[in-house]
Image (tube, rainbow, N blue to C red; front, side, top):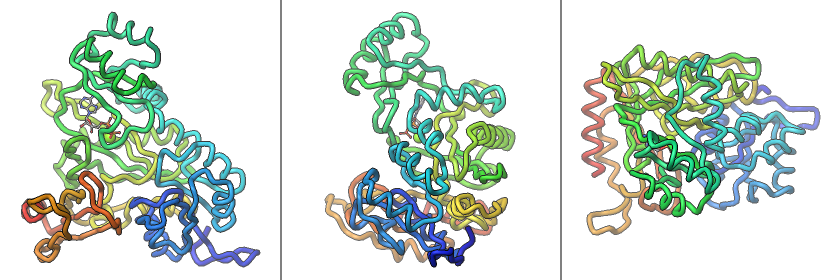
Length: 397
Ligand code: ADP
Ligand code: MG
């Protein structure tokens, strides 16, 4: 699907996205830069992506009329939102190319299936996941309590709908595990052994319909309270051999899924006493990812450009990072003054710093923990990027 092309019915090449959040917004912006028209399906009238798209279909994600209109307007469709019902993707795929597909999104939506896939990939990817047990029934709870003491202290995670540390409860011992499961409502969960983390990192891979694969170098991520806070993307942010293993594992995981589009695979670097630690695969996101936002400013093709290329069936450029970068997430907390009142931050001081790139998502209401935007700092060398990031973080409080 070439940008600017017009089909037999007079329709201009249009790419569609399910979901109107910031990932959808940056996808739409990348598509428009290439000359595509865009359509966003999103119930919220004021969404980040809906605001900037040529078409905004304002219905629920499973509304048949809305989905029919999306399929009518678009030559290909993606999702920015991994909890879109897999059935919706399946229905759209009857008439339009949809990437990523329903099957892979279904796997990524469910930690039980996701871990089973990682385990199945371990032979080729060379990287396994944390020791874990599936917990769906009271009998399984008892069995884990009696037979898997090595999983405690552990983290109980709901199989579905967890994000930014939500849907997780820590348990030190068997009694706390029962309480944690009750707290999560007794829904299907996985219990994961709590690992000593030396670091966390993620890899962005893009795979085309023809199987072509390109990838970005792994970046190191710092989470605060379960939410991504900082991404370090420069040579030496991770030990090179470990970064290369993570990249190869992510590519193996994407290939084995027959994935099409941008996939983010998150890893733990476990402190096992060795010099650089060992890799464990944590989870994957079937879409561009917060940890890849630095690619907008530091690379000659961003993760969103690659998502557009992959969806439209264009050749995938192997991206080249031209600047070291640090990304700072801007959560709603930055909008609160010392007295806890909402106000617009003073951006001028931040923007005066060399190499700062401000991205605000157009969200009308700031709330603590809400992702409002991000700031990427680039520069001629790593030392100046680190200094800039330190200064920006101070200014933002
Ligand atoms: P989410 O879907 O919320 O991102 P994750 O499974 O990635 O869920 O967990 C969020 C964060 O919690 C991780 O980035 C990591 O910092 C911490 N965490 C999760 N699982 C473990 C574990 N098994 N051991 C140690 N820390 C963990
Ligand atoms: Mg995570």
